[in-house]
Length: 468
Image (cartoon, rainbow, N blue to C red; front, top):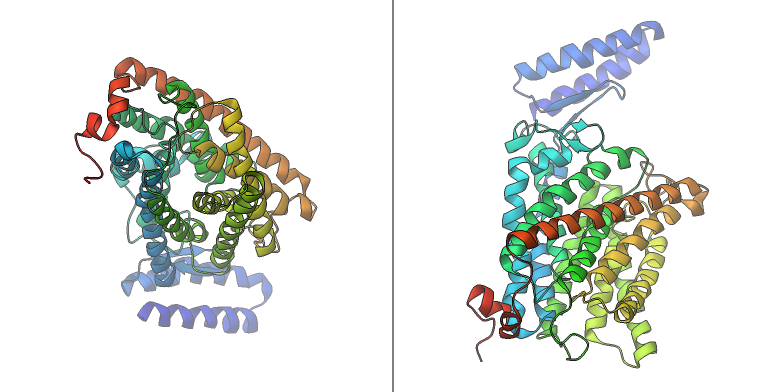
């Protein structure tokens, strides 16, 4: 309270009385500098208030804001909840003998990636930049990442909170990949792949786009992870699906989901969590968060409808799985654009995203690769469409901190978006291939045919999901 009284008084006094009324313009800067950089910090230090950043350019003071902090604590918890939600979503889609192994692969990412992040991952992703490629190790072991100091990426929330928020993104990204190789990968191989992929692929791409790296400096807009998360994970999913090969009986047997109600529940949890995923990426409670929140819901809702309509028209009947998958497709499609587009643009992104992702599943069947849970079709095509859509629909009238897209007179942004997507795709094709080959040499990638037929729940974990 004493900080607020002090700053409000002096902010108004020096700005409106001393500076504006009595001082000639030639002297205003010097008094402003003295008050902002000497008098206010010294007085606040004596009063015990140290959580401030002085911004000379604006002539204002910023501090950790309790409202923004509360908002981001909730957003962080929502994004964390998405990973168990993904486990439930995937768990319902596989056959009953693989349900626990599939859910564990998502859930355990909370443990694996969190350890990497705390030890050195956050520093490599968001630490001081080294040549636009990676962060240095200044923030390893969360050194200099305090709860009482503002984040350099978001000045009104603690640095530690920003770190935890970004951790939840890092956790769910490798978890998304697991849907592609469901029902056939050794758990030991999964662990090694997840560790190496997180370090060698996710952390560099995250730094390139969000951590001050070279792609972000080109002007690419990625509000909440369309490229960093969805495209990046989907390309790795494609590589793993191809390198592991098809499940036994693929194309000959019917692989029916064991529990669609579980999948619908998981879809609902993902939708709920996505509000933290997208709106939270504003990093403060305000207009941009409201914009992203609205775009998120509209895109998810419209894609659920467009997927079902396409399915109804092509196959004759709408399905529950189609509605759940369509919602996720729309949410993935709008992620990159959420904070930069109007509600009507989000509607178009969602409608087209649902159709594009549904058609991509049909193409999967044509190309005959075994992406078990359609990670490439939903997250890859949805993420790519979202990246392109940002280059089309982004508007500075919606978010002055963004850029105008093609439909608002700036074709350059579309080119930047495409270049960023292509670079990420190429990088995510090469390194996961190397990681998988190394993992295969170390422990082997696939379970045996007998273990696959027995089910990974028993063969890998000695437990079963259902006892009837």
